[in-house]
Length: 88
Image (tube, rainbow, N blue to C red; front, side):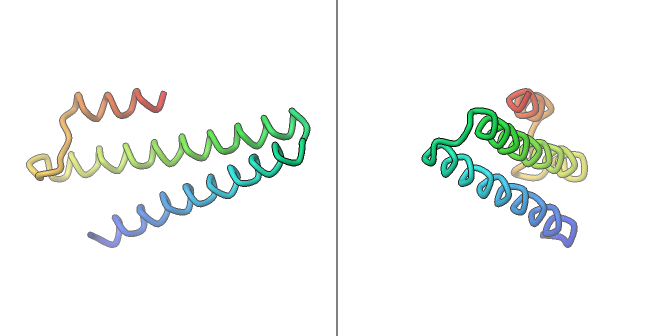
């Protein structure tokens, strides 16, 4: 794993941890009978954080496939497109 890969992995993990914290806040708000507006706003933040993490993961895979198209874990263009569209 290169320094760039490690840095990218850290960014992804940080995004996912942020989403995890936001989701915990949503659960707490629902349990406490929080307002619909607050719960939905926080839930939208969780969804957005997860989407961003997903796009970073897919874009990283795209870069890896361009750099090493013959690698064992390399994805085809069709597989990358399917992953990308899964997030849409």
